[in-house]
Length: 194
Figure (tube, rainbow, N blue to C red):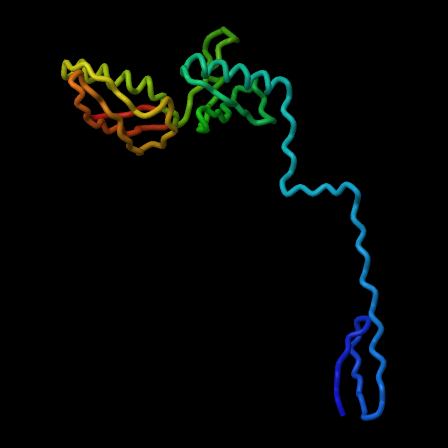
């Protein structure tokens, strides 16, 4: 006697096959049909709220200020969609230059003048390297009476407090020496030594 088990319509049946008897195989159960919507909406992340015209105008204005004051090309500026740009509380935006993203702190409360067109902002972790190179050159000229050219490798660097990196200075005879730069804080203050 052979024993076999078959699963039919969710119930377990025991079928005993005896010699000389034929068993009919269980009829297949139709698989449940699944209907798909013609336009399914599947989003792993919620859609961010749309930015108001006021926020978009503010982003353009901030981009212009960054280009003018920092002297570097700014590709994008993005502020939170829900921010009230007329608020008295500080808020943060993100800016991109040369493929590097950095934070811009907007501090409307610090505006003590009556000039409404003035925009108070500061960057976090952004070093404008041509300005740093100029500072190094002037410092070496003043301290050692040497004219040098400094090169810190580009236009900008996004750095964290405590981070160190190397710049190079070259004198009029072509001799090159390293300058060690240490980032002191998020505002871009640095200490350097030859």
